[in-house]
Amino acid sequence: MLALFDIDGTLLLGRPRAHQRALAEALADLAGVPATADDVLAVEPSGRTDLDIARRVLALHGQRDGGADAALAALAERAGRHFERLSRQGPPDQRTAPGAAEALGRLADANALIAPLTGNVEPIARRKLERAGLAGHFAPFGAYGSDAERREDLVPIARRRAGVEAGRLTVVVGDTPRDVACARAGGARAIGVTSSSFDRAALEGADAVVTSLAEAVDAALGWLGPS
Image 1 (cartoon, rainbow, N blue to C red):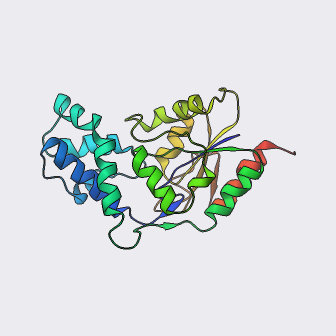
Image 2: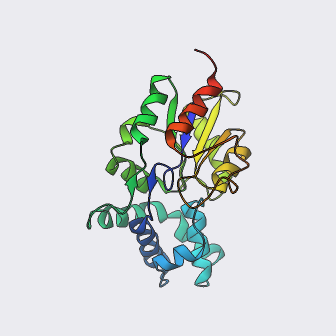
C-alpha cells in the first residue's frame, strides 16, 4: 500500500499563520504586489496547492498570465526561505494531531510506503514535518504544491516517484473535499478525517470518513485484508 497524507488539517492542526505570511511575503518579493496573509485567507486556501493559492492572490492584485507565471516559478524557494525565518519566531502555530506518530508507525509496521501529498510547496512541507517530529516516518518522495497547480495531478506524481504501479492500493488521507477529489482523480481511495472545518457531510464522497488518524489507519489496513 502507498499511503499519502495531507499535512495541514490532517497531520497538523491549527491555522498555519507562518506559512500564509511566507506565501504573501514571497509574492511581494517576486511580483511587487502588497500581498498579505489576509489575501491568502480571502482565496479560501483549504485543500488548494500553494501555486493555486498564489495565482489567485496575484489575480486579486491584478497580476495575471506571464507575470504571474514568472512569480510562481520561483515561489517554492522564496516562500521556503521566508517560512524558515518566520517559523523560528515564537512557538509553532500548529500542533501535531493526536496519535499522528502512532498512526504512521502502525502503517510502517504493515510495510506501507508513507509519503506526503500536500498543497504545501516542498520546502515548507518538509520543514513542518521536521518541526512536528514526523519526518522520520515518511519516505524521501511525495507530491507537493510546488509540483503542480492542480491538486488533482498529485496522485500520479506521488505514484511515479514511489515506483508504484497503477494497480497497487493507494490511499489518500486528508481533511477537505479537495483531498477527496484529488484521490478520485488519481484512482486512489480516499479517507476523509473530520479534524478541521469539514464535517462528515462535506466529506461524503470519500471511501471512508473518520474522526481520527487512528481510525484512518484502521480503514486503510482493513482494505489490505488479512495478513
